[in-house]
View (cartoon, one colour):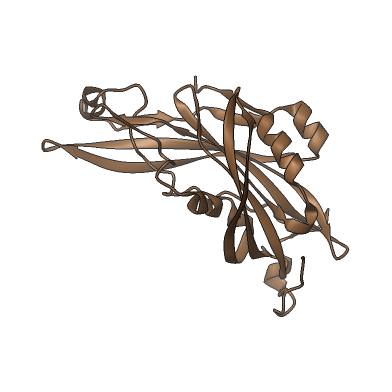
Length: 243
């Protein structure tokens, strides 16, 4: 159930975060990748590839996006496609090499109406991150995160998140393979709005795509009931490799 926050009305600084043209919150990035989705290995590369040479070893993910036809059906719009680069030092047998991995995120959102106001509070993201191999051992850069930790990645559009609880699960299709999705609920404040709502999150398992992994994530106010739309967004994900 949606509920108003007991906090004071938004300050002037908070009001500055509102989109004056559409009465929506500023489109702050919904996905906070940072170091959480970091370096685990180097896809298709051997230890010699990594630890030979003086320059940093760099690996960049391809792009996972949602098909335009699906966006037309669902009402979601592209917010931005951005990259985040994580750097880490590897040391083996006395040799140190810097490795840089660049993750790429396509982020979408759409406005929801709550108490007569519109907020960009329904968000969807497709995260592509390189598969990595060091010394012959392959790692999934996001497999070490549990479902709850993955859920936290998509909550950057919200503040003061509390009571994150695991709920139902379902399996759907993404990139011609089955993907398991866990649904979470939580209480959170829409950033810059001073409004606390119950939110629902969809957290997909990572799926191999080329030399990357692709992870779908979504969050929206629970009263908005966007679950089937999120499923269609996941089904509509496309992937193109880095050239």
